[in-house]
Length: 356
Image (cartoon, rainbow, N blue to C red):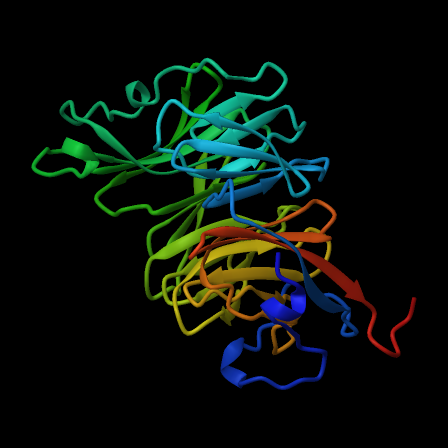
């Protein structure tokens, strides 16, 4: 295990002036006080077993999981705590249910107490649009709601899931509920590929290049968010549901207010290369990003013009990021040689002259 000094961590204190192009001068709707805490990253561990392209902490903060191609690895701190294998390698987003009882590896649900996958209706039986001829679906993206009851699925229709030559909509995004996979809403049917999905208690977000917002309570589309010039690679709601982050293939991050979808978003040019991962800090006005340059960056959301902290390159591209519920640890999945998960300690201190 290398030390923080060996892996290289540099800190940007308040007042340092990076290039103006790093972040647009849009104050975030829920701006925090000007005197912001200094944030630092220190490496706690580098784990070369149990790698995963998805990461998630349990609500208790003591457990976490990594997942890749249908398999999930369970952890306590930096110690392995078991592995589980899903029925298919076609898996996507990872989270724990709000009560911590289930591991939600979309589109599957694992009961941690029973040590078994939950019985659910076959997914493909629920995806075929009635206006299309029979064909196979390929899973494009999927994500569970925080309570583990509703599942949003984006799928491609046609031979091999690519729509070739079969009439009807080639892309469909639906919300399914419960073990029966009952259809709740059809969010999209058409020919545009919806690469990214996210769901919280109130909204569903789906994206190709533009981001469509669906109200779960009203069962209708309430906003269309534009501005990205290339495909959105990742979507994430903040833990409190006040913000949505959209990250695209050119490294541009946009952060939107869920209270007013028409408000100008905060825009950050996160790196000169494509960005792949994004995670909100649960307590501070900070968001983490990572991508092909292998650097983990923490960006302020209060209108400041510089990242708060950035790691040196981790020796591979960053595929996933996850904060623990207390905001004291950050996991980063670095797909390099070897692929590994880096666990950082996140520390915050009030700057000189700040009040208690």
